Length: 318
Length: 281
Image (cartoon, rainbow over all chains, first blue to last red; front, side, top):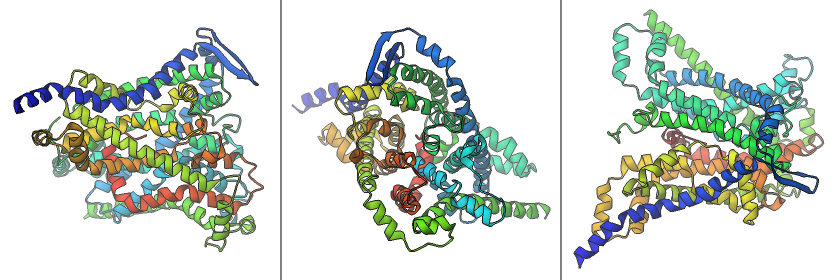
Protein backbone atom coordinates (compact mmCIF):
# COMPACT_ATOMS: atom_id res chain seq x y z
CA UNK A 1 0.00 0.00 0.00
CA UNK A 2 2.65 2.45 1.09
CA UNK A 3 4.87 1.41 -1.80
CA UNK A 4 2.14 1.97 -4.35
CA UNK A 5 1.38 5.39 -3.06
CA UNK A 6 4.99 6.44 -3.14
CA UNK A 7 5.44 5.19 -6.66
CA UNK A 8 2.38 7.05 -7.86
CA UNK A 9 3.73 10.26 -6.38
CA UNK A 10 7.10 9.82 -8.03
CA UNK A 11 5.42 9.63 -11.40
CA UNK A 12 3.38 12.73 -10.73
CA UNK A 13 6.04 15.12 -9.48
CA UNK A 14 6.61 16.69 -12.89
CA UNK A 15 2.93 17.55 -12.95
CA UNK A 16 3.38 19.78 -9.90
CA UNK A 17 6.13 21.71 -11.60
CA UNK A 18 3.73 22.57 -14.41
CA UNK A 19 0.95 23.45 -11.98
CA UNK A 20 3.20 25.78 -10.00
CA UNK A 21 4.45 27.71 -12.98
CA UNK A 22 1.06 27.81 -14.69
CA UNK A 23 -0.28 31.09 -13.17
CA UNK A 24 2.82 32.99 -14.27
CA UNK A 25 2.67 31.76 -17.83
CA UNK A 26 -1.11 32.07 -18.12
CA UNK A 27 -0.90 35.64 -16.88
CA UNK A 28 2.00 36.44 -19.19
CA UNK A 29 0.17 34.89 -22.13
CA UNK A 30 -3.05 36.84 -21.53
CA UNK A 31 -1.70 40.22 -20.47
CA UNK A 32 1.55 40.44 -22.42
CA UNK A 33 1.65 37.96 -25.28
CA UNK A 34 -1.84 38.50 -26.72
CA UNK A 35 -1.44 42.30 -26.48
CA UNK A 36 1.93 42.02 -28.19
CA UNK A 37 0.51 40.01 -31.08
CA UNK A 38 -2.43 42.41 -31.32
CA UNK A 39 -0.06 45.37 -31.35
CA UNK A 40 2.06 43.84 -34.11
CA UNK A 41 -1.04 42.95 -36.14
CA UNK A 42 -2.54 46.43 -36.07
CA UNK A 43 0.78 48.00 -36.97
CA UNK A 44 0.03 46.82 -40.52
CA UNK A 45 -3.42 48.42 -40.56
CA UNK A 46 -4.78 51.87 -41.11
CA UNK A 47 -6.80 52.21 -37.94
CA UNK A 48 -7.49 55.49 -36.20
CA UNK A 49 -10.22 57.66 -34.86
CA UNK A 50 -10.96 61.07 -36.28
CA UNK A 51 -13.53 62.83 -34.20
CA UNK A 52 -16.09 60.19 -33.27
CA UNK A 53 -15.65 58.24 -36.50
CA UNK A 54 -13.43 55.17 -36.55
CA UNK A 55 -11.41 54.68 -39.72
CA UNK A 56 -10.34 51.16 -40.60
CA UNK A 57 -8.97 48.73 -39.85
CA UNK A 58 -7.73 48.50 -43.44
CA UNK A 59 -4.62 46.52 -44.28
CA UNK A 60 -1.96 48.87 -45.61
CA UNK A 61 1.24 46.82 -45.23
CA UNK A 62 4.28 48.71 -44.08
CA UNK A 63 2.85 52.18 -44.66
CA UNK A 64 2.66 53.02 -40.95
CA UNK A 65 6.33 52.16 -40.57
CA UNK A 66 7.26 54.31 -43.54
CA UNK A 67 5.23 57.31 -42.41
CA UNK A 68 6.70 57.04 -38.91
CA UNK A 69 10.15 57.22 -40.46
CA UNK A 70 9.12 60.42 -42.22
CA UNK A 71 7.53 61.84 -39.09
CA UNK A 72 9.44 63.31 -36.18
CA UNK A 73 10.14 59.88 -34.70
CA UNK A 74 13.87 60.03 -35.33
CA UNK A 75 14.00 63.49 -33.79
CA UNK A 76 12.25 62.11 -30.70
CA UNK A 77 14.68 59.21 -30.63
CA UNK A 78 17.46 61.79 -30.69
CA UNK A 79 15.80 63.70 -27.84
CA UNK A 80 15.50 60.52 -25.81
CA UNK A 81 19.18 59.77 -26.38
CA UNK A 82 20.26 63.29 -25.41
CA UNK A 83 18.08 63.34 -22.29
CA UNK A 84 19.42 59.94 -21.29
CA UNK A 85 23.04 61.00 -21.83
CA UNK A 86 22.64 64.20 -19.78
CA UNK A 87 21.49 62.09 -16.87
CA UNK A 88 23.69 59.05 -17.39
CA UNK A 89 27.17 60.50 -17.85
CA UNK A 90 27.33 62.37 -14.52
CA UNK A 91 25.49 59.47 -12.91
CA UNK A 92 28.03 56.80 -13.85
CA UNK A 93 31.01 59.10 -13.14
CA UNK A 94 29.78 60.07 -9.66
CA UNK A 95 28.65 56.53 -8.91
CA UNK A 96 32.08 55.09 -9.78
CA UNK A 97 33.81 57.69 -7.67
CA UNK A 98 31.51 57.23 -4.66
CA UNK A 99 31.54 53.45 -4.90
CA UNK A 100 35.32 53.27 -4.93
CA UNK A 101 35.48 55.68 -1.98
CA UNK A 102 32.91 53.82 0.05
CA UNK A 103 34.80 50.55 -0.17
CA UNK A 104 38.25 52.05 0.28
CA UNK A 105 39.22 51.19 3.86
CA UNK A 106 41.92 53.85 3.99
CA UNK A 107 39.47 56.62 3.16
CA UNK A 108 37.48 56.10 6.37
CA UNK A 109 34.27 57.65 5.10
CA UNK A 110 32.17 58.63 8.11
CA UNK A 111 28.42 58.14 8.37
CA UNK A 112 28.47 55.73 5.41
CA UNK A 113 25.05 54.34 6.19
CA UNK A 114 23.57 57.84 6.43
CA UNK A 115 25.00 58.88 3.06
CA UNK A 116 23.80 55.68 1.43
CA UNK A 117 20.29 56.19 2.78
CA UNK A 118 20.21 59.80 1.60
CA UNK A 119 21.57 59.26 -1.91
CA UNK A 120 19.24 56.34 -2.53
CA UNK A 121 16.16 58.24 -1.34
CA UNK A 122 15.29 60.04 -4.63
CA UNK A 123 15.15 56.68 -6.42
CA UNK A 124 11.99 55.75 -4.55
CA UNK A 125 10.20 59.06 -4.98
CA UNK A 126 7.31 59.06 -7.42
CA UNK A 127 8.82 60.36 -10.66
CA UNK A 128 5.68 62.27 -11.56
CA UNK A 129 5.53 64.00 -8.16
CA UNK A 130 9.24 64.75 -8.41
CA UNK A 131 8.75 66.32 -11.83
CA UNK A 132 5.78 68.33 -10.57
CA UNK A 133 7.91 69.49 -7.65
CA UNK A 134 10.70 70.59 -9.99
CA UNK A 135 8.23 72.37 -12.21
CA UNK A 136 6.92 74.31 -9.24
CA UNK A 137 10.32 75.03 -7.71
CA UNK A 138 11.89 76.18 -10.98
CA UNK A 139 8.97 78.26 -12.24
CA UNK A 140 9.60 81.97 -12.72
CA UNK A 141 7.95 82.81 -9.41
CA UNK A 142 9.26 79.68 -7.71
CA UNK A 143 11.60 79.43 -4.75
CA UNK A 144 14.76 78.60 -6.76
CA UNK A 145 14.51 81.83 -8.72
CA UNK A 146 13.71 83.84 -5.60
CA UNK A 147 16.67 82.30 -3.73
CA UNK A 148 19.04 83.03 -6.62
CA UNK A 149 17.72 86.58 -6.88
CA UNK A 150 17.97 87.32 -3.18
CA UNK A 151 21.54 86.03 -3.21
CA UNK A 152 22.24 88.43 -6.05
CA UNK A 153 23.42 85.68 -8.42
CA UNK A 154 20.92 86.61 -11.11
CA UNK A 155 19.25 89.91 -11.83
CA UNK A 156 15.88 88.75 -13.03
CA UNK A 157 14.03 85.43 -12.91
CA UNK A 158 15.19 82.69 -15.33
CA UNK A 159 12.40 81.00 -17.23
CA UNK A 160 13.78 77.46 -17.22
CA UNK A 161 10.76 76.12 -19.08
CA UNK A 162 11.22 78.48 -22.02
CA UNK A 163 14.54 77.15 -23.35
CA UNK A 164 15.48 73.70 -24.62
CA UNK A 165 18.63 73.82 -22.52
CA UNK A 166 16.66 74.64 -19.38
CA UNK A 167 14.11 71.85 -19.78
CA UNK A 168 16.68 69.28 -20.82
CA UNK A 169 18.95 70.22 -17.92
CA UNK A 170 16.09 69.89 -15.46
CA UNK A 171 15.22 66.45 -16.81
CA UNK A 172 18.88 65.48 -16.73
CA UNK A 173 19.27 66.66 -13.13
CA UNK A 174 16.18 64.76 -12.07
CA UNK A 175 17.30 61.55 -13.75
CA UNK A 176 20.75 61.96 -12.25
CA UNK A 177 19.39 62.52 -8.75
CA UNK A 178 16.98 59.63 -9.05
CA UNK A 179 19.50 57.08 -10.25
CA UNK A 180 23.03 57.86 -9.05
CA UNK A 181 22.38 56.39 -5.59
CA UNK A 182 21.09 53.17 -7.06
CA UNK A 183 24.08 52.85 -9.39
CA UNK A 184 26.49 53.66 -6.57
CA UNK A 185 25.12 50.86 -4.44
CA UNK A 186 25.22 48.37 -7.33
CA UNK A 187 28.82 49.27 -8.20
CA UNK A 188 29.82 49.19 -4.53
CA UNK A 189 28.67 45.61 -4.25
CA UNK A 190 30.60 44.80 -7.42
CA UNK A 191 33.81 46.32 -6.09
CA UNK A 192 33.38 44.53 -2.77
CA UNK A 193 33.18 41.30 -4.74
CA UNK A 194 36.76 41.74 -5.92
CA UNK A 195 39.16 39.64 -3.87
CA UNK A 196 41.01 41.81 -1.33
CA UNK A 197 44.17 39.82 -2.16
CA UNK A 198 44.38 41.60 -5.50
CA UNK A 199 44.25 45.01 -3.88
CA UNK A 200 46.83 43.94 -1.31
CA UNK A 201 49.17 42.63 -3.97
CA UNK A 202 48.85 45.85 -5.94
CA UNK A 203 49.65 47.86 -2.85
CA UNK A 204 52.80 45.87 -2.21
CA UNK A 205 53.80 46.55 -5.81
CA UNK A 206 53.50 50.26 -5.08
CA UNK A 207 50.28 50.96 -6.91
CA UNK A 208 48.65 54.31 -6.08
CA UNK A 209 44.93 54.88 -5.77
CA UNK A 210 44.49 56.27 -9.28
CA UNK A 211 46.35 53.33 -10.84
CA UNK A 212 44.41 50.95 -8.66
CA UNK A 213 41.13 52.41 -9.83
CA UNK A 214 41.93 52.32 -13.54
CA UNK A 215 44.07 49.16 -13.71
CA UNK A 216 42.31 46.91 -11.21
CA UNK A 217 38.87 48.08 -10.14
CA UNK A 218 37.54 49.15 -13.53
CA UNK A 219 38.58 46.06 -15.53
CA UNK A 220 37.32 43.72 -12.81
CA UNK A 221 33.87 45.26 -12.56
CA UNK A 222 33.45 45.50 -16.32
CA UNK A 223 30.63 42.92 -16.44
CA UNK A 224 28.46 44.82 -14.00
CA UNK A 225 29.37 48.11 -15.66
CA UNK A 226 28.09 46.69 -18.92
CA UNK A 227 25.01 45.45 -17.14
CA UNK A 228 24.38 48.87 -15.58
CA UNK A 229 24.88 50.51 -18.94
CA UNK A 230 22.41 48.27 -20.77
CA UNK A 231 19.70 48.38 -18.09
CA UNK A 232 20.13 52.14 -18.00
CA UNK A 233 19.72 52.34 -21.79
CA UNK A 234 16.54 50.27 -21.53
CA UNK A 235 15.34 52.55 -18.75
CA UNK A 236 16.26 55.58 -20.86
CA UNK A 237 14.32 54.21 -23.80
CA UNK A 238 11.27 54.06 -21.54
CA UNK A 239 11.77 57.61 -20.25
CA UNK A 240 8.32 59.05 -19.81
CA UNK A 241 7.10 60.22 -16.40
CA UNK A 242 9.57 63.02 -15.83
CA UNK A 243 9.41 64.82 -19.21
CA UNK A 244 5.69 64.10 -19.56
CA UNK A 245 4.76 65.79 -16.28
CA UNK A 246 7.39 68.51 -16.50
CA UNK A 247 6.22 69.66 -19.93
CA UNK A 248 2.60 68.57 -19.54
CA UNK A 249 2.98 66.08 -22.41
CA UNK A 250 3.97 68.81 -24.87
CA UNK A 251 7.72 68.21 -24.94
CA UNK A 252 8.21 71.99 -24.92
CA UNK A 253 9.87 74.08 -26.12
CA UNK A 254 9.33 73.14 -29.75
CA UNK A 255 9.23 69.42 -28.93
CA UNK A 256 12.88 69.31 -27.94
CA UNK A 257 12.12 67.24 -24.85
CA UNK A 258 9.59 64.87 -26.45
CA UNK A 259 10.66 61.26 -25.85
CA UNK A 260 9.66 58.17 -27.80
CA UNK A 261 7.27 56.92 -25.13
CA UNK A 262 5.64 60.35 -24.91
CA UNK A 263 5.11 60.09 -28.67
CA UNK A 264 3.60 56.63 -28.20
CA UNK A 265 1.43 57.94 -25.39
CA UNK A 266 0.03 60.72 -27.55
CA UNK A 267 -0.83 58.21 -30.30
CA UNK A 268 -2.53 55.95 -27.76
CA UNK A 269 -4.50 58.84 -26.32
CA UNK A 270 -5.72 59.94 -29.73
CA UNK A 271 -6.56 56.29 -30.44
CA UNK A 272 -4.35 56.10 -33.51
CA UNK A 273 -3.88 52.36 -33.16
CA UNK A 274 -2.05 51.77 -36.44
CA UNK A 275 0.71 54.28 -35.76
CA UNK A 276 0.93 53.34 -32.09
CA UNK A 277 1.34 49.72 -33.16
CA UNK A 278 4.13 50.47 -35.62
CA UNK A 279 5.94 52.65 -33.07
CA UNK A 280 5.61 49.88 -30.48
CA UNK A 281 7.14 47.41 -32.91
CA UNK A 282 10.12 49.70 -33.49
CA UNK A 283 10.56 50.01 -29.72
CA UNK A 284 10.10 46.28 -29.31
CA UNK A 285 12.85 45.51 -31.81
CA UNK A 286 15.30 47.92 -30.17
CA UNK A 287 14.56 46.68 -26.66
CA UNK A 288 14.63 43.09 -27.91
CA UNK A 289 18.21 43.58 -29.05
CA UNK A 290 19.07 45.16 -25.70
CA UNK A 291 17.30 42.35 -23.82
CA UNK A 292 19.37 39.84 -25.74
CA UNK A 293 22.56 41.57 -24.62
CA UNK A 294 21.37 41.60 -21.00
CA UNK A 295 20.50 37.93 -21.31
CA UNK A 296 24.00 37.18 -22.53
CA UNK A 297 25.52 39.14 -19.65
CA UNK A 298 23.35 37.61 -16.93
CA UNK A 299 24.04 34.12 -18.21
CA UNK A 300 27.78 34.56 -18.18
CA UNK A 301 29.50 32.16 -15.78
CA UNK A 302 30.32 35.00 -13.44
CA UNK A 303 27.66 37.45 -14.48
CA UNK A 304 28.49 40.29 -12.17
CA UNK A 305 30.46 40.87 -9.05
CA UNK A 306 27.47 42.14 -7.10
CA UNK A 307 25.66 38.85 -6.98
CA UNK A 308 28.80 37.01 -6.07
CA UNK A 309 29.44 39.50 -3.30
CA UNK A 310 25.91 39.45 -2.01
CA UNK A 311 25.77 35.70 -1.82
CA UNK A 312 29.40 35.14 -1.00
CA UNK A 313 28.67 33.19 2.14
CA UNK A 314 25.69 31.34 0.89
CA UNK A 315 26.47 29.62 -2.36
CA UNK A 316 29.47 27.95 -3.79
CA UNK A 317 28.32 26.64 -7.12
CA UNK A 318 27.49 28.05 -10.55
CA UNK B 1 54.19 60.50 5.14
CA UNK B 2 53.37 62.11 1.81
CA UNK B 3 50.87 59.41 0.96
CA UNK B 4 49.19 59.87 4.33
CA UNK B 5 48.68 63.57 3.69
CA UNK B 6 47.42 62.82 0.21
CA UNK B 7 44.98 60.29 1.60
CA UNK B 8 43.56 62.63 4.21
CA UNK B 9 43.16 65.30 1.54
CA UNK B 10 41.22 62.80 -0.53
CA UNK B 11 39.08 61.92 2.46
CA UNK B 12 38.22 65.56 3.05
CA UNK B 13 37.36 66.02 -0.62
CA UNK B 14 35.20 62.89 -0.55
CA UNK B 15 33.25 64.15 2.43
CA UNK B 16 32.73 67.56 0.85
CA UNK B 17 31.37 65.98 -2.33
CA UNK B 18 29.16 63.60 -0.35
CA UNK B 19 27.76 66.46 1.68
CA UNK B 20 27.04 68.45 -1.49
CA UNK B 21 25.27 65.48 -3.08
CA UNK B 22 23.28 64.75 0.06
CA UNK B 23 22.35 68.41 0.24
CA UNK B 24 21.11 68.23 -3.37
CA UNK B 25 19.07 65.14 -2.58
CA UNK B 26 17.45 66.65 0.50
CA UNK B 27 17.24 70.31 -0.49
CA UNK B 28 14.24 69.96 -2.81
CA UNK B 29 12.32 67.93 -0.27
CA UNK B 30 13.18 70.45 2.38
CA UNK B 31 11.71 73.30 0.32
CA UNK B 32 8.69 71.11 -0.39
CA UNK B 33 8.04 70.52 3.30
CA UNK B 34 8.64 74.16 4.22
CA UNK B 35 6.42 75.49 1.45
CA UNK B 36 3.64 73.06 2.29
CA UNK B 37 3.36 74.81 5.64
CA UNK B 38 2.92 78.31 4.19
CA UNK B 39 -0.24 79.93 2.91
CA UNK B 40 -0.64 81.07 -0.68
CA UNK B 41 -0.30 84.75 0.26
CA UNK B 42 2.97 84.09 2.09
CA UNK B 43 4.38 82.06 -0.81
CA UNK B 44 3.64 84.89 -3.24
CA UNK B 45 5.93 87.15 -1.23
CA UNK B 46 9.03 84.98 -1.55
CA UNK B 47 10.92 82.10 -0.06
CA UNK B 48 11.01 81.12 3.60
CA UNK B 49 13.68 79.03 5.25
CA UNK B 50 11.54 78.09 8.24
CA UNK B 51 8.16 76.38 8.45
CA UNK B 52 5.02 78.50 8.62
CA UNK B 53 1.76 77.94 10.40
CA UNK B 54 -0.59 76.97 7.56
CA UNK B 55 0.12 73.25 7.54
CA UNK B 56 -3.30 72.20 8.80
CA UNK B 57 -5.11 74.71 6.63
CA UNK B 58 -3.31 73.45 3.50
CA UNK B 59 -3.94 69.87 4.51
CA UNK B 60 -7.64 70.51 4.99
CA UNK B 61 -7.80 72.25 1.62
CA UNK B 62 -6.24 69.19 -0.02
CA UNK B 63 -8.42 66.72 1.87
CA UNK B 64 -11.64 68.57 0.98
CA UNK B 65 -10.80 69.25 -2.65
CA UNK B 66 -13.37 67.66 -4.96
CA UNK B 67 -11.48 68.53 -8.13
CA UNK B 68 -8.39 66.53 -7.13
CA UNK B 69 -9.63 63.79 -4.76
CA UNK B 70 -6.25 63.18 -3.18
CA UNK B 71 -7.40 61.07 -0.22
CA UNK B 72 -9.43 58.86 -2.55
CA UNK B 73 -6.35 58.66 -4.79
CA UNK B 74 -4.19 57.51 -1.92
CA UNK B 75 -6.74 54.85 -0.97
CA UNK B 76 -6.83 53.65 -4.60
CA UNK B 77 -3.05 53.64 -4.80
CA UNK B 78 -2.84 51.70 -1.55
CA UNK B 79 -5.29 49.11 -2.86
CA UNK B 80 -3.48 48.72 -6.18
CA UNK B 81 0.04 48.68 -4.71
CA UNK B 82 -0.87 46.44 -1.78
CA UNK B 83 -2.67 43.86 -3.89
CA UNK B 84 0.01 43.97 -6.62
CA UNK B 85 2.76 43.42 -4.08
CA UNK B 86 0.89 40.56 -2.40
CA UNK B 87 0.03 38.56 -5.52
CA UNK B 88 3.32 39.41 -7.20
CA UNK B 89 5.48 37.96 -4.45
CA UNK B 90 3.25 34.94 -3.86
CA UNK B 91 3.08 33.88 -7.49
CA UNK B 92 6.72 34.74 -8.18
CA UNK B 93 7.73 32.55 -5.25
CA UNK B 94 5.42 29.83 -6.53
CA UNK B 95 6.89 30.00 -10.03
CA UNK B 96 10.42 30.07 -8.70
CA UNK B 97 9.75 27.04 -6.50
CA UNK B 98 8.09 25.20 -9.39
CA UNK B 99 11.14 25.72 -11.57
CA UNK B 100 13.63 25.07 -8.81
CA UNK B 101 12.26 22.01 -7.05
CA UNK B 102 10.77 19.94 -9.84
CA UNK B 103 12.24 18.18 -12.83
CA UNK B 104 10.17 18.35 -15.98
CA UNK B 105 10.66 18.49 -19.69
CA UNK B 106 9.86 22.16 -20.28
CA UNK B 107 11.85 23.36 -17.29
CA UNK B 108 14.88 24.64 -19.17
CA UNK B 109 12.79 26.28 -21.87
CA UNK B 110 10.52 27.96 -19.31
CA UNK B 111 13.50 29.34 -17.41
CA UNK B 112 15.22 30.62 -20.53
CA UNK B 113 11.96 32.20 -21.65
CA UNK B 114 11.51 34.12 -18.40
CA UNK B 115 15.12 35.30 -18.54
CA UNK B 116 14.56 36.50 -22.10
CA UNK B 117 11.57 38.66 -21.16
CA UNK B 118 13.29 39.91 -18.01
CA UNK B 119 13.76 43.48 -19.16
CA UNK B 120 11.08 43.77 -21.83
CA UNK B 121 9.41 47.17 -21.42
CA UNK B 122 5.68 47.04 -20.67
CA UNK B 123 5.13 50.03 -22.91
CA UNK B 124 5.53 48.05 -26.13
CA UNK B 125 2.46 45.97 -25.40
CA UNK B 126 0.42 48.90 -24.05
CA UNK B 127 -1.69 49.28 -27.17
CA UNK B 128 -2.80 45.66 -27.32
CA UNK B 129 -3.21 45.65 -23.57
CA UNK B 130 -5.63 48.56 -23.72
CA UNK B 131 -7.68 46.90 -26.45
CA UNK B 132 -7.68 43.60 -24.58
CA UNK B 133 -8.91 44.99 -21.27
CA UNK B 134 -11.53 47.04 -23.09
CA UNK B 135 -12.83 43.83 -24.66
CA UNK B 136 -12.73 42.10 -21.28
CA UNK B 137 -14.75 44.92 -19.73
CA UNK B 138 -11.97 45.90 -17.37
CA UNK B 139 -11.36 49.36 -18.86
CA UNK B 140 -11.49 52.09 -16.24
CA UNK B 141 -11.14 49.71 -13.31
CA UNK B 142 -8.33 48.91 -10.90
CA UNK B 143 -8.12 45.20 -11.77
CA UNK B 144 -5.91 45.52 -14.89
CA UNK B 145 -3.39 47.39 -12.76
CA UNK B 146 -3.22 44.51 -10.29
CA UNK B 147 -3.59 41.18 -12.08
CA UNK B 148 -0.67 41.46 -14.55
CA UNK B 149 1.79 41.64 -11.66
CA UNK B 150 1.39 37.86 -11.29
CA UNK B 151 3.93 37.60 -14.10
CA UNK B 152 6.94 39.62 -12.90
CA UNK B 153 10.12 38.15 -14.38
CA UNK B 154 12.48 40.28 -12.28
CA UNK B 155 10.85 39.26 -9.01
CA UNK B 156 10.84 35.66 -10.17
CA UNK B 157 14.55 35.84 -10.88
CA UNK B 158 15.23 37.23 -7.42
CA UNK B 159 13.17 34.51 -5.77
CA UNK B 160 14.86 31.83 -7.84
CA UNK B 161 18.32 33.03 -6.84
CA UNK B 162 17.23 33.11 -3.22
CA UNK B 163 15.85 29.57 -3.36
CA UNK B 164 19.08 28.36 -4.96
CA UNK B 165 21.04 29.76 -2.06
CA UNK B 166 18.80 28.86 0.85
CA UNK B 167 16.47 25.94 0.19
CA UNK B 168 18.07 22.50 0.37
CA UNK B 169 16.02 20.04 -1.68
CA UNK B 170 16.44 17.48 1.06
CA UNK B 171 14.04 19.57 3.13
CA UNK B 172 11.37 19.13 0.46
CA UNK B 173 12.11 15.39 0.36
CA UNK B 174 11.75 15.18 4.12
CA UNK B 175 8.40 16.95 3.97
CA UNK B 176 7.25 14.48 1.31
CA UNK B 177 8.27 11.50 3.39
CA UNK B 178 6.29 12.98 6.27
CA UNK B 179 3.28 12.93 3.98
CA UNK B 180 3.00 16.61 3.19
CA UNK B 181 1.15 17.48 0.00
CA UNK B 182 3.05 19.59 -2.53
CA UNK B 183 1.00 22.76 -2.00
CA UNK B 184 1.20 22.35 1.74
CA UNK B 185 4.97 21.94 1.51
CA UNK B 186 5.14 25.17 -0.42
CA UNK B 187 2.85 27.18 1.85
CA UNK B 188 4.08 25.91 5.19
CA UNK B 189 7.74 25.09 4.65
CA UNK B 190 9.06 26.95 1.63
CA UNK B 191 7.25 30.26 2.12
CA UNK B 192 8.53 30.81 5.69
CA UNK B 193 12.08 30.16 4.46
CA UNK B 194 11.60 32.74 1.71
CA UNK B 195 10.28 35.44 4.04
CA UNK B 196 13.34 37.73 3.79
CA UNK B 197 13.32 37.61 -0.01
CA UNK B 198 9.58 38.16 -0.11
CA UNK B 199 9.77 41.13 2.23
CA UNK B 200 12.38 42.87 0.09
CA UNK B 201 10.49 42.23 -3.13
CA UNK B 202 7.18 43.25 -1.56
CA UNK B 203 8.67 46.64 -0.77
CA UNK B 204 10.05 47.11 -4.27
CA UNK B 205 6.87 45.95 -5.97
CA UNK B 206 4.80 48.20 -3.74
CA UNK B 207 6.96 51.23 -4.47
CA UNK B 208 7.08 50.48 -8.19
CA UNK B 209 3.33 50.13 -8.35
CA UNK B 210 2.77 53.23 -6.22
CA UNK B 211 4.90 55.31 -8.57
CA UNK B 212 3.62 53.76 -11.81
CA UNK B 213 2.10 56.30 -14.14
CA UNK B 214 2.13 55.18 -17.79
CA UNK B 215 -0.35 52.28 -17.78
CA UNK B 216 -2.72 53.58 -15.05
CA UNK B 217 -3.03 56.90 -16.88
CA UNK B 218 -4.18 55.05 -20.00
CA UNK B 219 -6.55 52.69 -18.19
CA UNK B 220 -8.25 54.90 -15.59
CA UNK B 221 -10.68 57.57 -16.73
CA UNK B 222 -13.07 58.36 -13.87
CA UNK B 223 -11.90 60.56 -11.03
CA UNK B 224 -12.91 58.32 -8.16
CA UNK B 225 -10.66 55.52 -9.48
CA UNK B 226 -7.56 57.59 -10.16
CA UNK B 227 -4.30 56.71 -8.46
CA UNK B 228 -1.94 59.33 -7.04
CA UNK B 229 0.38 59.77 -10.08
CA UNK B 230 -2.61 60.43 -12.37
CA UNK B 231 -3.88 63.07 -9.98
CA UNK B 232 -0.45 64.71 -10.00
CA UNK B 233 -0.52 64.75 -13.80
CA UNK B 234 -4.02 66.22 -13.68
CA UNK B 235 -2.75 68.91 -11.35
CA UNK B 236 0.05 69.72 -13.79
CA UNK B 237 -2.41 69.95 -16.66
CA UNK B 238 -4.77 72.27 -14.81
CA UNK B 239 -4.57 76.03 -15.13
CA UNK B 240 -1.75 76.26 -12.76
CA UNK B 241 -0.65 79.75 -11.97
CA UNK B 242 -3.93 80.92 -10.46
CA UNK B 243 -4.04 78.18 -7.90
CA UNK B 244 -3.31 78.08 -4.21
CA UNK B 245 0.42 77.27 -4.16
CA UNK B 246 0.33 76.09 -0.55
CA UNK B 247 -2.22 73.50 -1.58
CA UNK B 248 -0.15 72.38 -4.56
CA UNK B 249 2.92 71.82 -2.38
CA UNK B 250 0.78 69.96 0.11
CA UNK B 251 -0.58 67.67 -2.63
CA UNK B 252 2.92 66.79 -3.80
CA UNK B 253 3.93 66.18 -0.20
CA UNK B 254 0.95 63.92 0.43
CA UNK B 255 1.81 61.95 -2.72
CA UNK B 256 5.34 61.09 -1.62
CA UNK B 257 4.96 60.85 2.15
CA UNK B 258 3.82 57.20 2.27
CA UNK B 259 6.94 56.06 0.41
CA UNK B 260 9.21 58.24 2.55
CA UNK B 261 7.68 56.73 5.67
CA UNK B 262 8.26 53.20 4.36
CA UNK B 263 11.80 54.17 3.49
CA UNK B 264 12.56 55.68 6.89
CA UNK B 265 11.61 52.46 8.63
CA UNK B 266 12.99 49.95 6.13
CA UNK B 267 15.95 51.74 4.52
CA UNK B 268 18.38 49.10 5.77
CA UNK B 269 16.53 46.27 4.03
CA UNK B 270 15.80 48.30 0.94
CA UNK B 271 19.45 49.22 0.39
CA UNK B 272 20.52 45.63 0.97
CA UNK B 273 17.84 44.55 -1.49
CA UNK B 274 19.04 46.80 -4.31
CA UNK B 275 22.12 44.70 -4.95
CA UNK B 276 20.37 41.39 -4.46
CA UNK B 277 17.62 42.39 -6.86
CA UNK B 278 19.98 42.60 -9.78
CA UNK B 279 17.37 43.80 -12.22
CA UNK B 280 14.98 46.51 -11.23
CA UNK B 281 12.14 48.24 -13.06
